[in-house]
Image (spheres, rainbow, N blue to C red):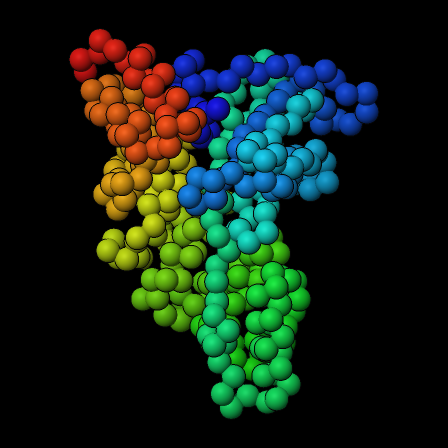
Length: 323
């Protein structure tokens, strides 16, 4: 199965879309369109049981809902052509969003999505020194709810504390985690912005904000937040990979290649950066360099993985190319 939603990838990586039969229900969102995808964690492992909501923009209740299978895969058929919003939710991960244009007559590539972990806040970050006992108890209850992943309870507890400590960085980040876990990314980002407004040099908060914005498909805002983070502070290649994928989907392939190179520089022993950079380089006509990237994928990825299979297919297709 193709690794990512990369609309530029040619027939070798494209999936044939089967036209779905029109459902009997008289819903105006039904049609002959189909979309599918796969959801993975930051290490590329499939996330089973993630909730996929496919909705018409500005109509939160109109559209189908499904779950990912054991391999993290999902599919939805019988939908009309046009713009759709896809929301991806899983416990312990930040909620993701994608906007997708569906066609009822043309084949589409699958939506591949890598979920970022929900931001963490250590209990001691929400300082309680000098606060009334009821506030201390609320902080304790919030931390316990966070540990149990009871996001709504955690948010409610920390909201009680916020008026007494409106500028506490630990509290704001704890609230961001709770809101993110509950699927309220707008409120989560609002809490992080309060941290960055107070301390523009807090690069950890900027990194967290960048991840959340990118997970929502907000490329320009996410990249702007990432620019506040010193390059040497970025140790996770996935953030650069996610930026690159968003650029690919916008057909800004030169910029995508640059971010995949950053991912390779951070983690030269991981195959993902090479894989996506190879795809970008095929589109750019850099076939010789793409071959080198796919050879790296073959050397570094698990032998039975779909990435290795696809790399072999691409290498075969590139045989004889001297560019």
